[in-house]
Length: 220
Image (cartoon, rainbow, N blue to C red; front, side, top):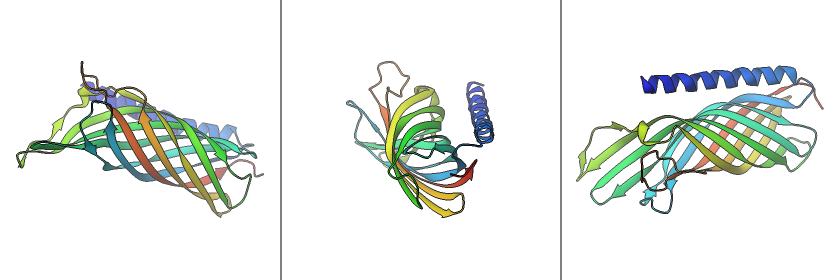
């Protein structure tokens, strides 16, 4: 019942964010807005002073985003993404993958290096609220023997607040249409485990995300 309520809450957040995107796109018709889908890959691990050695694990990320960039160097973007994170641990005769799935809402302030043109690179920095959808131990072996998959969602905090920074590459392909690539690094600001006396563990993720943007509003 707990997991059902949590998932219902996250679905409600996602629906609300999508409606907000549509609302802002409508009321800001005189501004330079764009909306579109995002798809990409995460390469994540878990870091911290007392965390055992672990390796990057790939994961999927995807969802929707909205971006505002006025006729100057500055802009802002917000995403709603499904984000797979975690790490691969191997200690002694035990190996396993800790998978953590989040509903991620990153918001970033962007600095565009040029005012206009078919190519608009930008640097960005911001933060993200990551809402835990579920945690699982997968690909678990002990002495070479496979172990059953385990759910350990309750071992982690329901919300992970992170900082992020990265590089964006925006390419204009047709009238009011852009292909965008973001390369970003994101890391937790606080420990992610909810277990008492657990080591200080934090998510660290490199993401490569592609999107197709539809321009909205007045043209400048």
